[in-house]
Amino acid sequence: MQSQFFGQLKAGDQFRAIEGVVHFFMANSLGGASESWISYVDAGIIEAIQRGGAIALGLPAATYAGKTGGANQWASFPSIQGGIGFANRNDHDRLWSVAEQAATEYGARLADAKFKRSAREQSWFECTQLFRWIMRNREATYQGLKSTAIGPAAWAFINWMTDVTDVKPGKCLTEVAWFYAGVESGTGGLAEVARILPRLLQCFGAAA
Image 1: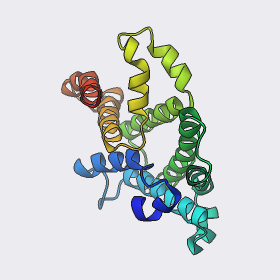
Image 2: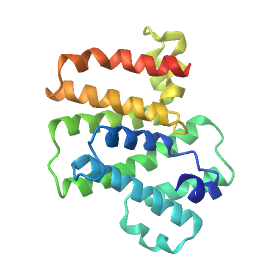
Image 3: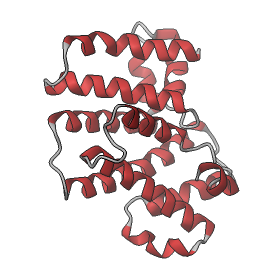
Image 4: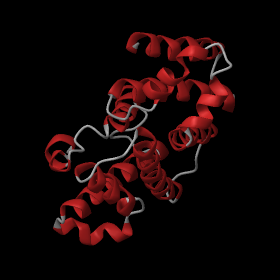
């Protein structure tokens, strides 16, 4: 889908972060063939991306896009990406996150209609909300990080974390968010607590 479908819009590498999320859940039997709240959310997100691409390309499937939350927002993103492009990283990340937010809310509505969110799934969902907020508020995130231990590497860390063209950050962030969600909801163990920050820094260090 990414290369053949969105390649025509110069957006073939713009969904690898989402690919990383799906990889983590499938590898840990948290989505995929088994029905779950998370699998329905992910399915809704992917549907919105597909419908959005159909609108941007003028394909027949676009006629159904009005029923899919986030489709119109995703149509705007690849249209700009493949047209005039984005003036800067902030503009790119803002529109990407707005489209992803709408698609995620659509997927969550589908999931909520069939399943009850577990405490851990709710905590994980809140972590993803934070990720999208960071994409829309890069400067505010930097101001919050520059005085911490990460200090001089703050911008590099933000750019790595929000790089939607790379599978690895998305997969690592999902892993860390799932560990944190387990701790926050009381369903995770001490082993998961100990793995959160080291795992995140390990991923970032490997990319630096």
